[in-house]
Image (cartoon, rainbow, N blue to C red; front, side, top):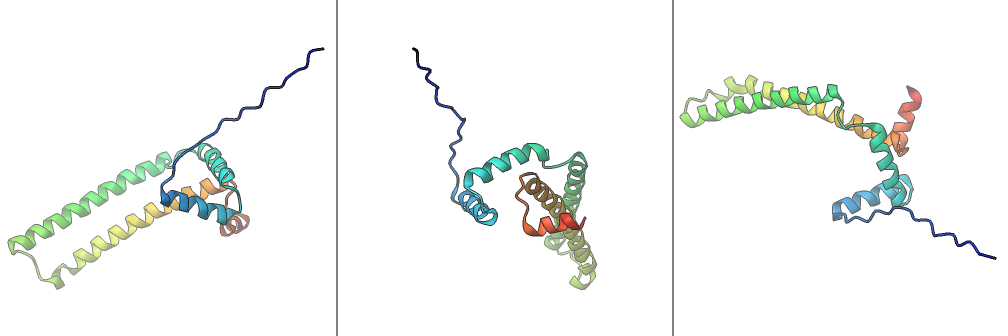
Length: 142
């Protein structure tokens, strides 16, 4: 009578090296979500595919527009610096509205980029079922 020998099941494995900073982040995720390292990584891999690209087509267009605005701010700053070097700069009191305007534009660009990246991070965590308690609470309210 022949005895059947079942071959051991082979599961694909991943072995990777992490920087100290990435290892620290992984440890923080493990502590935050109360899951083993492998499960955190598996969920993030699955979620990255389910959540789709980091930027939607709409967000990509917004980033292109924001990059254009950043270039305009840079050109304005370069012009101001050239005027200062030539000794043609206006008094600080006269230039204050320009600086405030530049500050406001930079602030709005930062706010838009932050909104896009925070929204994607929340989406990725939801897809990975790694939502933080505050995000879970927000979802229940909507």
